[in-house]
Image (cartoon, rainbow, N blue to C red):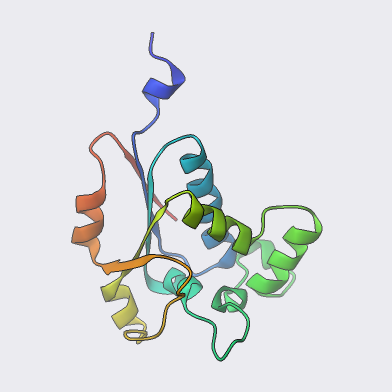
Length: 152
């Protein structure tokens, strides 16, 4: 009989597509949990989700704070408001999760095509996150045959 460790994927490859804060946040939750149990992770940010990795403008707040909240923000607000509520309820906040992912070696990729499609090509990305640019071919070449792929 196979152990739990033998049944789990040897890698997790996540396409982070949605620009909703709650989905990007949960992609970070998923990635940090996976690397904490020694499953390597690649996060491939594309389309609206790529805005979460944009550099702050002129020392302002992180760009992800302006993402639409998603379903959890049905009463109004944006990513920043939802994240502030998470902090108040001792739920892992965006910056802590992002920092944990960086510290634990999650691979961050941003889609060249997605940036072009949103007219974000050449826009400054965060410098505290090791972001690689590439396309779907690069992402798929990074995936593992014995891994799992998620679309968020």
